[in-house]
Each structure stands twice: as C-alpha cells, then as structure tokens.
Length: 357
Image 1 (cartoon, rainbow, N blue to C red):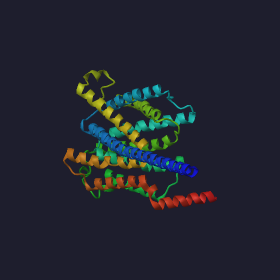
Image 2 (image 1 turned 90 degrees about the vertical axis):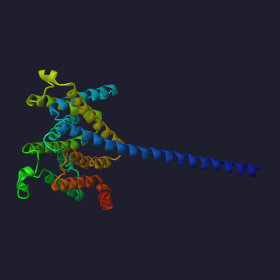
Image 3 (image 1 turned 30 degrees about the vertical axis):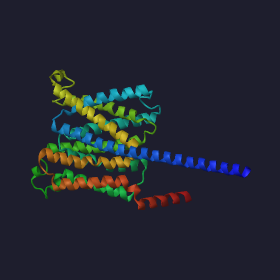
C-alpha cells in the first residue's frame, strides 16, 4: 500500500510539474506574442509619424501657408494639451533641481527654434531638399556629444558623419563648389536666390535639433510631457515676434477678421497633424528601439522625393538623388553600427581592459 501510495504521489508530482511547465510555456508564448505585437505596432506608428510629418511639410510648401500664423496656432494647442496633462497628472511644470531647470529651458528654446526654422525652410525650398539638410542633425549631435557628454568617437560615427556632410553638400549644391559643374545657377535650383534662404533656415534647424538632442540627455528624470510643453512656450514667444515682421501674418492683428474659414481650417489641420506626428513618434520610441525609429524615419526622405516628383512632374537631378542616398546610408549606419559583430567585439575588449585596470 505504501509503495502504491508513493507511486501515486510521484505521478501526481510529475503531473503538477508538467502542468507548471505547460503553463510557463503558455505564458512565455503569450508574452512573445505581446512583444511581437508591440514591435509591429511600433513600426506602424513610426511609419505613420513619417507620413504625417511629410504631409505637414507639403501642406506648408504647397498651400502657401503663413508659417508665423501656423506656428502660433500649433504652439497654443500644444501648450493647452500638454499643460492640461501636466496639471491632471500632478507633475511639475519645471523640475526642482536648478541645473535641470536650466537644461529644460535650453532644450525648449533650441527645440522651438528648430521647429520654426524647419517649417519656414520648406516654404522657401522643395521639401526633399530641406529634409536632406535637417536629417544631417546626427553630425551636430555626434560633435556636441563628444564635447558636452564626453561620448567617445568611433570609426562608424566619423564615417556616417562624413556621408551626411557630403550628402548635404550634394543636395544644397553651393555655387562656389558647383559653378564649374553647372555654369547656369538657375539649373541648380528652381527657387532662385530664395532657395538659399531655405538652406540657411534648414541648416539652423539641423544645428538646433542636434543641440536639443544633446541637452535632452542632460534632463534625466524630467518627463517627456514637461519637455514638450517647454518646447512650445518659447516657440510661442518667437512666433509672436515673428508675426510682427511678417507682412502676410494676420492672426495677431486687426486683420484676423479677414482670415477665411478655409484658412482657419488649414491652420488647425497643420497644427493637429504636426501634434499627431509628434505623439505617434514618441509612442513608437516607447514600443521599439530608438535606433529602429531613427532608421524608419529615413523613409520620409524617399517618400518626399516621390511626392515632390508627382506634384512638380520633374524628376530630381542626379546630385539630389545621390546626396539623399548618402544621407540615408549615413543615418542607417549610425542607427545600427552598435549591432555589427566587429563593433561588439571591440566594445567587449574595451570593457575587459577597463575591468583589468
């Protein structure tokens, strides 16, 4: 009886172990499915953000929207929405630490300048050209990270930075370099002298975007909501000043009554689309790797070239296509260089040497 009871007990234990293993396997499968689903959703959100950003840029470019008025509407909406979120969640409008307060304000100022100049640039030049210049922001981020954050430079960062610089040069086609290749400057750009106003604005957006990326790294512990809110506050101040020098601006003058219902709809639409693009991008970064988001965001560049070709009926010139390709390559190398086997082995060797020291 005792042996039979012991056999029955052991069989029962085996069954319980098997059940536990099956339940663990099931839970692991469920978790894997959730992770895979999150990755798919993150990829779709990232692609959607790129489409929304492109739509916003082309609306500014094609509909002749007054940029200063569009920025005022966007900043007011952003402050209302994110200010309400901060208030409801009980978060602080500024961090307690004085140093982080300064960093929060600096990133807000840099981000607002980047936002305004990037929108203004597409009103002076084709959207793909502006995006090529703005996408070169990793060059600024790499240099400032090395100076401010003491990040180490490696061959991949330097090579990708070189590709980005060459790509931007090919897209911009500065006259002092390209006059020998293209004697007639009108063949370089269809926008005439104003094209280079767009170039300077896009370069400013590129530089301030890179500065913002580095300063945000100093804002540890500060919520994204607070950072985005402080991006809109100085942006509104700059936009108000901008409207005083923009003869076409009507929103902060007596001419506001002359803004048609259609123009109000376009202004609100660009503001909402821009906010949706930012929100979907932030959500995508929470669900998948920022490197993958950065790589997927480069799809905005070929999309912009396709849309520009369809709208204008003209195929981009060889220099623009080659420059755009180099910029895409530079961003992709920078996003995924840490996954290369040779980089990992070198990193492991450095960590081992550091431990020995």
